[in-house]
Length: 619
Image 1 (cartoon, rainbow, N blue to C red):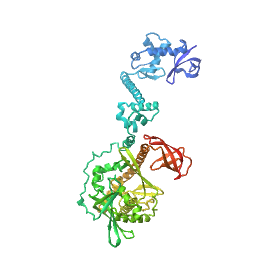
Image 2: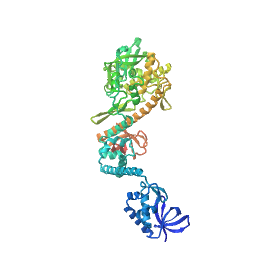
Image 3: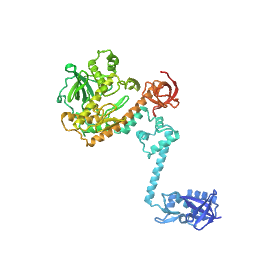
Image 4: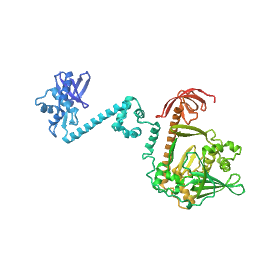
């Protein structure tokens, strides 16, 4: 029986001939499979040894041949077949097994022997062979190193070379590196995620820092330090502007250092009065296109998260312009002349300086200025009379905007306090008198200044709302949610870049100077687009970190059962926390239903928990 040694799809095979049709043959393999092959694929015909022994003998012989010596036997620049090379190598007419052994070796070593067609080869040139061998050795060493890394990682030991690469591996890995390939293989072997495996290796000592550093890695790759920034911003001299004859005060929470706004109330004749809204003016010190301006344009907003913040402006600039008490500071003031029925009869904008009398803090002021003290006409606290005037004015403004005074009465804000790695979370009902006073004055200022810019033909960045969608644009448009004809952000220039831009325009308008920007200025469009993206990203990050600290609080207080209220479907909001959880076992209950849920399996890396339905409450 005649057998053949042939090549098919790059592989070397044997079979016996069932039919020979000159140009093609019918072949039966060792395993009985029948196939049709072309005559050109036949490398060798043989009768002995038997087909089932042939390949084994040929492979064993090939394993004993030194491939380097075989390469040296080849004639440079000449093509050859396995049979031709076998003649030279063995020094006699080779038998079928010897021919097959040489052919197998040629086929298995493409870096030594370049294939030129079915059964034909050519020896690699020396310089190409040296480069290929060096590359192969490099790959072998890399594979050994990778295997060593996998062995360490599976044993939950972190290789030393991983330490400087941890941020890259966690947040944006280069999947072509051996470190990533080793980490991926170790994850598959341990059935753990990358963060979980690295945590087991001691590479994530702080789950908080894992989340915080991911944000910095993606959005602050150069870090948050401002030490390298120049401090040569224009330091305004208080004597450059007149001192306002008002007694001003600010209202902020205890942690605020960027005090953007202050207020004053000055009596006029016949029961009328003048309200002053005074906004800090960093635009006087940070010039367009300066290094500080480019720095602020890159950050675009202050980033807030529980326990810390990343300011938009360097601390030196903030301290120079913040409206700290008893310090004279330049401001952009909006004065409202208000009749005894709280109707605004006139407005006036002015650049001046003020000396804030007191920085009122929310935690203290809320105990003094609230619905109860207003109802009982208590006035035994600082600025009680002025706050009462502003309260009555705010109610009038809210009514003129067509807004329901109780719209926020059921909403709750949450404050996070982090001290020595312990978290306290407090609730605060939104829409308290302090909130209304501050928000109504800010709405009035932003709407009025937006109108002034539009009337003067000055470009500005506006916020509008229609059909429930809020957007930013360079054209004034109604803000249906606030009930105003136009609205521009200009009251927080130390915290938001669009406010800084709008303040430059307002200062130019009030000073009688040309605007800093025109409607055709690309800087406005770029700043508006970038700000919207950054603001949304920062808000999402803040929500994520608040969720993290809510989970930390549950662990800290050892909470395993808590109340909640159904939001929709199987989502509930936990009591006392701004935390939404999915409850797979929740029955079909109406939104607003009070329930009791069980809490378990809190995972700070994934920021998840397992919640189970325990029953309804009749709260």
